[in-house]
Image 1 (cartoon, rainbow, N blue to C red):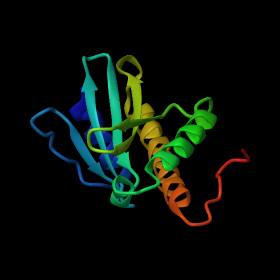
Image 2 (image 1 turned 180 degrees about the vertical axis):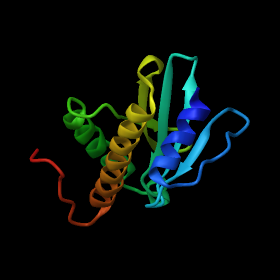
Image 3 (image 1 turned 90 degrees about the vertical axis):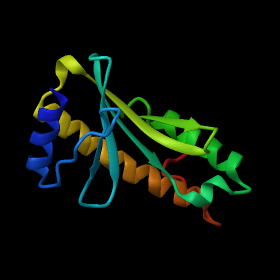
Length: 142
């Protein structure tokens, strides 16, 4: 099912259709260079996942301060966006994550979910840049 959905969506978006890796994950590289991993979760959901931020975040002396800002912004955005921000402390990486119930997965719903996901991924990459800048501006009136 997922393979067919991936083929339909990539053809619709005119991007290369990837082959799954050993774990059954598809790495979609979109026209803007953003990469999204898509995989099935226990036949219950289709998961979209992508790291965001940059490598300088990992070694930043202001890592805790930046993470606090991202968490605040994530909470503000939580009501209006189905994507969730997650943190992997072992490799100091922020991730954007979204689950789409398998029962609702179709070419149309996956394409809509992917477009929303990519928009939010762009937002979070910009938010990290702003949080790390010397004169950060909040994307929200906090």
